[in-house]
Length: 93
Image (cartoon, rainbow, N blue to C red; front, side, top):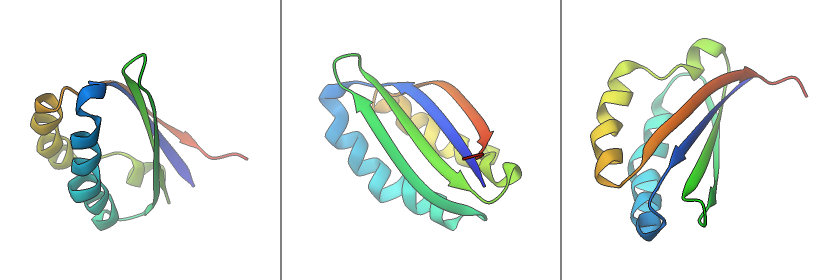
């Protein structure tokens, strides 16, 4: 199993809108991708930072297709979300 960890800056004033977008668009898109297992996230409202963790069957599955990134990028920008880091790790424990 592999985990993809993504860290981003976000506007806490728009958190509710961003959560709605994740629930309505992002998570269903993940579920449609091969190898998807799970999704979770956390926020630091004071720092305006968030982390998203997704789990996948293989490293290849954890690599988002360019079409997915092209789809979410403009909406993220509208919501004030700026991706900082995204890494894939093999789950070892």
